Image (cartoon, rainbow, N blue to C red):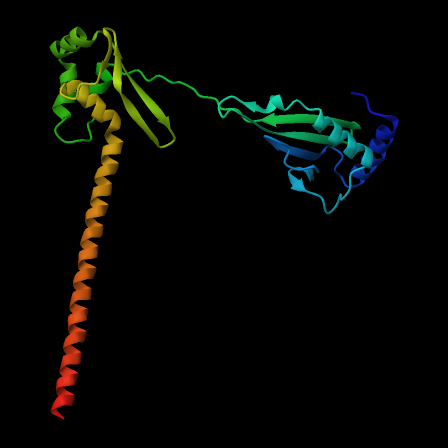
Length: 249
């Protein structure tokens, strides 16, 4: 897109002002779009992420008209977000006085998911210290070749457990993929149940901590109720004693 003579003249004059303010390497204005343009006027000016509207409180009319024309003809389909099925983004104009040019950028939001695999063999599991009671011996059975052969016979040479989640929350899916096909985790099978508990142990510990907190709160509430009971009866007895004294008088 080529600038008009008027726009070129205004850009040169405006560049001198930016140079005098030590903002020659780029001042920004931007429009926000969320289904529609949010404002008629652009946000700005910004220099190095700082609002400089108090120092630079105008934009040449022909340059402002250029911004508006480009905004109105911009294909907002460039803002499309497939994950949220909407159009959301910003259209930014940068006036660079050093190069005497106007740079136009657009930003859009995107959602990217990644898959990761964690492989563990029986030797790895046998060296894990179980943090729950009564499972140490079960972990050590993985060093027994007969037990390993039994698992291989039942499930094949591998078992894949799928974890879904992000941040500090998630869950283990009930289905596992094995060499012999896809099957459900059988809780009655000690070895698979052990892996399941190993992977979900943190959630179990959190539930136990929650129960402890609830028990402590119940004890505190009971203590408060007991105190209220005795305070009430002490006050009541005081009033009875006072009335008795007055009656005797």
